[in-house]
Image (cartoon, rainbow, N blue to C red):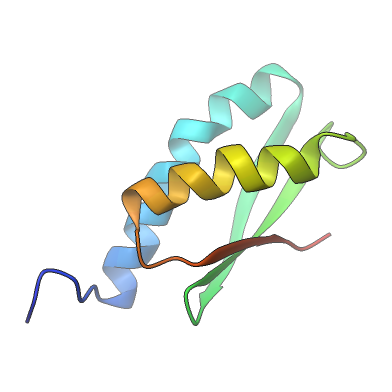
Length: 83
């Protein structure tokens, strides 16, 4: 098995690590993030608390969350917020 091939468990574990890194920043603003699913290199998350109505949440999702997740799990292509 090559280093670039990750099992779904490894991917999920790495995505969770990324979310753990992001979570304190969201919680300091009264928000949170939950991992919903990972399908076909797309991560589905739910922004919660103050993150729901926040106008910068799409920017936060794309720049902060997606970038951090890709750092841990480079095969991830997209992060989508499920409201």
